[in-house]
Image 1 (cartoon, helix red, strand yellow):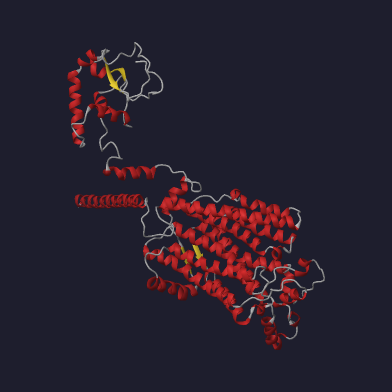
Image 2 (cartoon, rainbow, N blue to C red):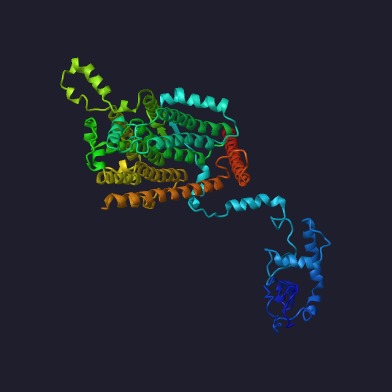
Length: 618
């Protein structure tokens, strides 16, 4: 028929040879096979090498007895699979065409393949039709390769089996902080509350405090009465100095709330049996973000001026009298002291993560930042609320100590009187505590894993060194753009620290060459450019970095949830893949139990054989 096809077309038939049916004779049979038909073109006439159905009918009839046997066998198979017996042949042929298991009959095809290749797929053949095969389909989906953006196939395989190993040997944590968090989890925390929600709630406390302090102290130095008076006298910044003290009280309370909630999330996870690698990474990421929030609020609470105001104002007749500081002069200025307050917590944090990356354990020392450090930071803010931020700009502590020691040491140390501010003591104690902690950790890792581990410290060394170089080239940077600069430092720190932790959890190599986000910092530190251009580049750099981080964090959290079959902030609603994960865990448990039984059986048989041999010898 050469007319265009406009109706449903019958199956096309092809002549094939089946020696197994004819005893080796070249007798042809016809079989329906799926063929793509172009419904927009007229059908071509069959060639002479492809006989029609009517021309092959005589040869097909000669095999009627054999085909009847095949039909009987096929019917038995259909009946055993609960297929309706009165299904029409047209429906069967149509279904056979759409069946994924259909194979065309070719030379050498056995009778069983002929009878099964053209019948309608039963419930057992199709996992979509059979509820009993849902588990097999899910298992196939579980084993099928998935394409993720950040998680590699190795990460997908290793992530579910990760186990956290760590301890905090701080007496303050063991005697006070941990029992308090445990009591709050047992008495005041509902079981439906997700641990990650508790972690995020703690970070929200610190973010709120940071926003309040930022509003009242955008340049960090607004609480300094001496600077405020000078700015008022020069006609600049009439509102500088009007900083309410209650913001420092709120910051102290927020830090204690953050610390308590950070200790509660792990206990809530164990209570609700919802511990997961995602919880560890989420907690680690929130701690990394909180590092810059606490440092910025501490500087504002101590009325710190992060640089030279005389240099910033460019002379212009403005003179800002500040007490001489021997510590500031030794380090290179107050801008360096401000940088140390930012980087000391970050360096300690990164080195602890670096140690965990190689040793597999996170052991916090007897005096550490998450325990004693946060308590001291909260106390600093509360003291600023009680006595005013300017107490940290005075030299009262060292002067009182020198007066008390004068009968013993004489007047040899009196030259230090009035040159060491209380704020300088905070910076010195932070630096000394940092050196003591990281020296022990680095020495231990080098001794156990070799000098090649130092390359993993390179990204953080570039961050610290690049920023100090930039600050040396532009000493007024933290005075002009304090918030933008700290946000940039925080973004770079969060990116490299969380990636190092993720690589530790999935047992992958931390690739230094992929820390491309540090390249603009190196360029800024070495390039000669005007102040206006540098500020514009800095703002674009920080904005672009946090946009990228927002994407990376969102996608990474989604991928981890997809692999583990959990939700990030919900432990009540079942995840669609949780059933599959639980079934896989159950299968592994059964296999392990079976192996244990076989091992026990072999041991018993071995013991019995040994006993029999001893009896025979006796």
